[in-house]
Length: 233
View 1 (tube, helix red, strand yellow):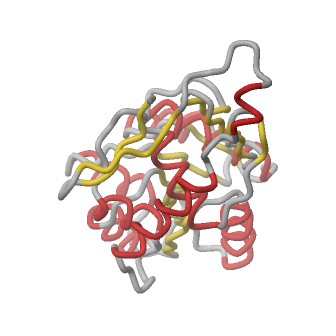
View 2 (spheres, rainbow, N blue to C red; view 1 turned 180 degrees about the vertical axis):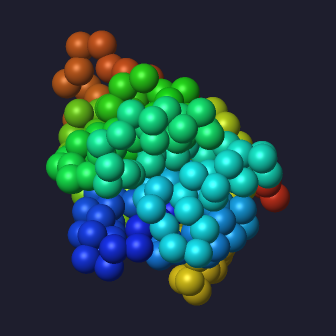
């Protein structure tokens, strides 16, 4: 999942970047409203953490312009002032949630997970598709109850697909959502990550045999010339 982080405080932005990346997110950054508006309108972000007190263009104006342009990604606003008028204005402008500074990083991550889940129609913090499970809180992945170790990019691909079970996702879309804006993107590597995931996420015969009522097996289906889809076998 790809997050746009908009914060003009250098230290806080660095802390938030580290926390978001540690939670498995790809992070794009802006430190002013003009750049934030551009990135939000042109890049495929899954959610935004938006400070309201921004230079050049304030955060509330940026949010209104995104919504007017039809950009509907979830937005979590940050405000340094415990002012209910500002919170109401943010929600009315199209924000999905808010946090007042100072805040705990764990709360920000929890609220962000919730926003992304709701945007993709998921109710639980643990994503489940057949015998595949991904805990968005801990990053723990299992197949048929057995833990699976993934690289950062493999995790990002699986995370994106598990937020959209049964939905056809193109290689270009996956590429946009697992790499940051300034990264040298190569959609051909998606095929490599998917191939590795298929091998790592294949349940062993022993684990299937030991289960009294095994869950349906999940797999990543290739739709030739179009992309990938997470389905039940």
